[in-house]
Image 1 (tube, rainbow, N blue to C red):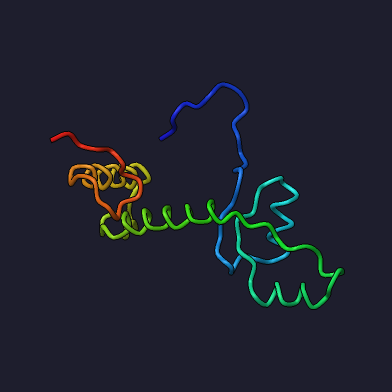
Image 2: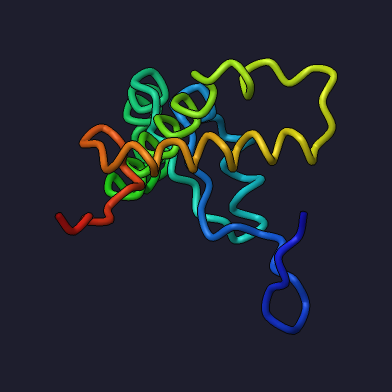
Length: 128
């Protein structure tokens, strides 16, 4: 299912990519840097220690946007909440259309139950 976007060439690159410390390699960062994509990946302790041990030749510290990194947790919780429903968690022998319908059904079910404090994306205030 496709939603019609703005007219013109479609955007194929994200502004930023968030990942955990496992993706904090020089290769991953240089790949993103070449494509002008911001890497929101914290630096591992051993990488920081090696960089500091080298002194000036170790390079400068990697930039890390902590506020943008916090949003990564929000997305992961939403995906975990969706996958908690067995109809979505086991999607073998399904067409993409029926899988998307299951996502819509799960989302409607969440909205029907009202706003939850642990649900980060539902911010609608229901009138009494």
